[in-house]
Image 1 (tube, one colour):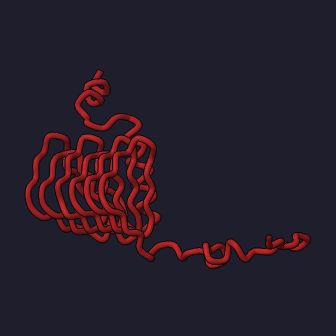
Image 2 (tube, rainbow, N blue to C red; image 1 turned 180 degrees about the horizontal axis):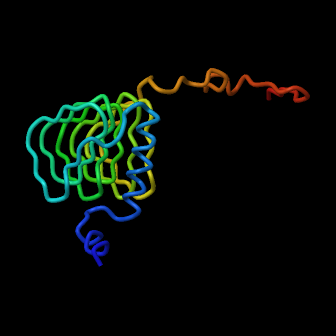
Length: 164
């Protein structure tokens, strides 16, 4: 009975909890560590947050977020902020500019209104994105073998090139 009451009180579903655990595990692999702070559903914050490590936000935030770590934005979160982070994983609503040194991951049903600047972006089906995207150099080095300029010049052994 006590366990059932706890499930009703929490703002995280079992799937969200496993997603947070997965993201936190990935964060540890990236050197960010465990979730160090949590802004819960229904909490409103105005101002600037600066931290190192991993923080999860499920409430409303208006201002700025600065970190070299990971920012996790829950499905119920509404963020109106300029975000500078190592990595951002969002299922919530963001209005503002996001700059991530490593990656941005937008998971359904995320809504992103603003610009994103990152070397790696992943977006699930169901995400709404309205804004500008700038892919920067960072985590991944581009493949030198497969470039658009060399596509027309590839000749494979046993295949003759015919111009006509």
